[in-house]
Length: 565
Image 1 (cartoon, rainbow, N blue to C red):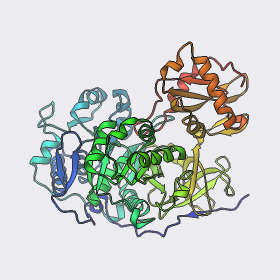
Image 2: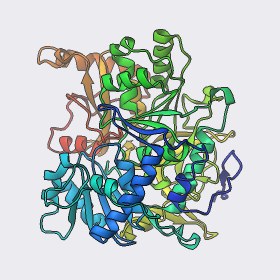
Image 3: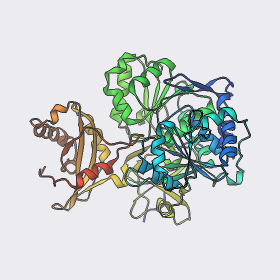
Image 4: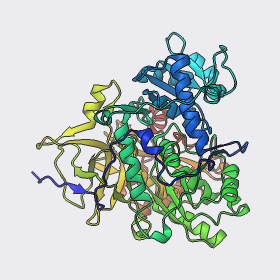
C-alpha cells in the first residue's frame, strides 16, 4: 500500500477574513469613488455607479422584506439573462439573510421546474423576457413569481427595479462569525453534463475565501509588470454560472471594476466592446477561444489593449491557446498570455491557475493550486495514493470547498472521502497529475474516460487533436459499447468547416481521409474505431462544457460500427 502523499499549495496560506460575503465585497479596498461606473449595459449604455449599486441593493433588500416578507433562511431563485440589475437583485436577497439560487436563462420550463423543486425556492425572481417560461414552470407549486424589471409585474405587484428605486435603503443583514461556514449564500446548480443537475451549496465562508484566493493567485503572483489591472471587465459569461458569478457579481464590486454587461455572447458586440472600453484582460471559455482563432472579423477591430486571456469552465488545449496568442501577435503586434484556470462549482469555483511568469507551463497545465488548499492523487477505485507521475483522481481540501449538495445526502456522501486519519477530502472526479513544482495537468473526467480493451482513452486528447485538422471546426468524442467486441469504442462527432464535405458523394471519402490523418498521430488503441459522424453543432452548456449525454443518446439507437479499423 502506498503511503499518503499530500501536496500543499506552492503559495503561503492567506489570512481568510471572518466576515460575511457582502461585508467583504462592499469593503472595497480599492477605495472606489462613489460615482465611478460599476456596471454598464453593453447595448443601451445605461450604467450604475458604485454608489448606485450599494444604495439600490439596500433599498431592494428592504422592499423584498417589507413587500414580500422575505425571511432569513429562505431560498430565492433568480432566472434572468445577464443585466446590470443582476448583481443588485442577487445581493439584495443575500442582504435579507436569504439564499440565492441563480438559474441558467437557457432552461426550458420543465428543466426550470426541476431545479426549482431541487432548490426548494419560495420565490423566483424573473426577467420579463423569461416570464412565460417561469409561469409554466411554477404551475402546481406554491412558488411565487416576482418580476425583475419594469415598473410593475404582470400581477400589479412592484418589480425589483421599482423597489430598488423607491424603498428607503436599510442596513443589510450581517452574518455572525459562528455561522459563516454554514450559512448558505448561493445554491449553484452543477452543469449536469452527465446527469441531473445538483444544487451545490456555497457558504459565505466559501465565497470570501475563494475571492481572496482568486485575487492572490490570478492577480498578485507572477511578474508585477504583467499583472492584470482589472480596471475594466467584459462580462458575457452567464452570471448564473459560478465562474461569472464570482468574477462579475462579487470581485467586480469589491475592486471597483467597471463591468460591461452583455446579455449573451455575440462576437461583433464582444469585439466592439473590447475596442471601445479597452480591457487589459479577457475572461472567456474555450468555444470563444476557438471562434476568435478561426473568425476573420478580429482584424476589423482594435484589440491592442488585451494582454491576458483567461479561459476556464472547460478544458483549453495548449495548441488552441498558442494559436490565439499567435493571432493577436499577427494582427495587432501585441504579446498576449493565454492561460487557463481550473475549478468546479464545488470549489467556489477556483482551484488552480497559471502565474504569468510561467508561460513554459501553460501548454499542458492548469497551473498551481490556490493558497490554503491541499491535494492528493489517488487510484479512484482503491483510494490509495499513486506515485508521481502516475495519473489518478484529484482530491481537494480547503476553505473554499462546498459542504455538500442541497438536501441531497446521498450525492454529498459520494462526493467526499474520509481517509484513515479522519481528514475529509472532496472527490473532484478529474483525472490528473502534479509535478515537482506544483503544476497540475488534467486529462479528463473519470466518467468521461473510454475503456477500450482495458486501455484508457481520454476524449479531450482526441478532441484537441481533431481540432488541428484543417477541415474540422469543432469536435467531441464519446464511447459507444460494442457487444460484438465486449468493449467501448471511441466515436467522434465532427462539425465541418465546409458542410459540402459531408454530402452523400463526399462523406465516405472525407471519413476515410480523416482516419488516415489521425491514425498515425495516436496510439493504436486510441483510434476512432466507433467511427466519425458529421453534425451541425456540438451540444454544449453555456459555460462551454460538451454535453456528452446528448451525444450518447444519439448513439443508443444507432447501428453498430461496421469498420474494423
